[in-house]
Image (cartoon, rainbow, N blue to C red):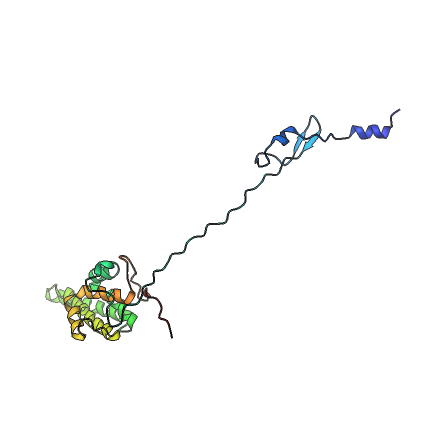
Length: 222
């Protein structure tokens, strides 16, 4: 006669048979479930845990490099008066197409302490307004062009002479030579001063910000 306690234990026992589908599944399969229940055999088989690929570190983005220009030699301009193709913007464009070069003149004047940017621009606007009024009153339209143009011409000459004296530039024969260059090569003179002050080396380099710094390397203090 069998033991009733043992019979009851065998009735509720679970056969530890591993599900064949779970064994055949790849350990990296993403379709496996967390647990399978076989209703026919009463067996429970745990699906393997999906392996997650290792996370890759984000690629390091290269930072834009700033080109540092060495300062021009003493007593000389950075380049020649005819080297305007080396920088078309902003030097050439501002000299030829923006208020007779007065925006760039005002920017350079403020950088070297010759005059404030606002003062130069306001003077140009006032002279242009006076020229417009005179043109309307007399019927001579050239005044609206002549007055601001003459102001830009003489301001360019004065700024060039001041910059040459500040940097001890004697390449053109002193103050008289710089005056002649500023008069006969008006627009090219503005572009040359901009390249000299800001260190422009590319065709498109710089902007019209009055407080813009230059591209030169910092001066080493001894």
